[in-house]
Image (cartoon, rainbow, N blue to C red; front, side, top):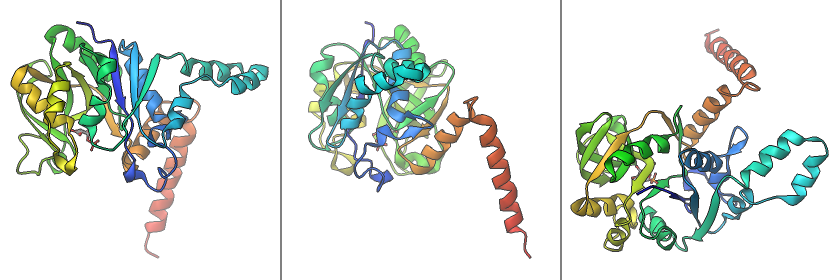
Length: 295
Ligand code: G1P
């Protein structure tokens, strides 16, 4: 079956980014000049997704406004800013975007469950808003190609340093092909000694619809929340689960340093900014060196 629909959970409160997230959604923070969530939507569209549901919460209205038409703005840009006009108009026609609210912050598994009637009985993708992947072939597209072959749930993974296992869903697995593993165990944010490996789920999933029944049977786990990782463990008892080691650089833009790294990386890819940024960083580093010379 073809994967046509995607869920983008965006209901999180963004506590790692306070005070900036007090009154604005972290998903709208710009990486250079494009909101983080637009990168995610564009990745989904470039991977062949037609319908997207964004799971929002309170304080997230700006996300809906961003993907809507802005007639007044378009009228103003029409006068003499035709390039910007095209960029602005394009956003509202990227995909069919729907919204559902997660009324309480009960965890990622619960957020995915909020979209169950939209998804129905077909396999679907999940793209987490905090994870931006920079790659030649979009990360989800790579996974779609693997899905064509395996027709089973696939988790986008990469190896991470052992010291970071407690930040992620970690899989235990065995090799099953080129960059593909068969998943044999899953743990949400384990301690270093509990972790079955250092292979982490990094915000991209293609999931069978049987997950919804599994979420119904998932009790609160890490942090008292309904964890998607725990529901996937139940799914593994019923169906095969695979992990795919995707090609690309992944940034955690929900984290301050990850956000700064992504900003620099994307700015370095922009012809209009790249040269001045490199020059600025060089000057900065030279000054830093000079400042550190003992006098
Ligand atoms: C979520 C998932 C976790 C996954 C991570 C990827 O955690 O629960 O399994 O590894 O995203 O970024 P969060 O970072 O939302 O706490």
